[in-house]
Figure 1 (cartoon, rainbow, N blue to C red):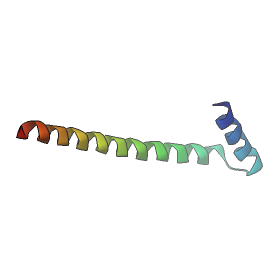
Figure 2 (tube, helix red, strand yellow; figure 1 turned 120 degrees about the horizontal axis):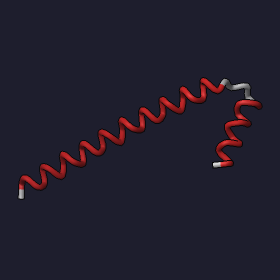
Figure 3 (tube, one colour; figure 1 turned 180 degrees about the vertical axis):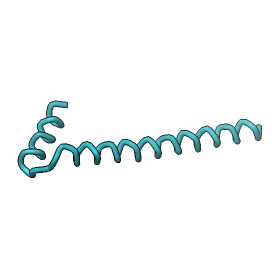
Figure 4 (cartoon, helix red, strand yellow; figure 1 turned 30 degrees about the vertical axis):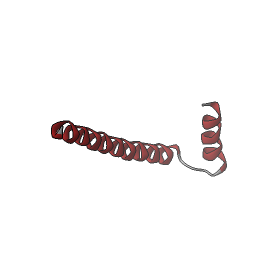
Amino acid sequence: MVACSAFLVMAVKLYDLPVSTLTSNLLTILVGLSIILGLAALLGGFLAFIKRRTK
């Protein structure tokens, strides 16, 4: 956790990255990840439902 914070502070200071850009990129990644995990959970539930129904 401390190393991640130090890396972010270094990126902001050394490369002159705005914090808003970093947070918007983080939110974009989190939204994409949640969509992928949600679709995987739905597919898993659907496959379990199909398997239960055919027995």
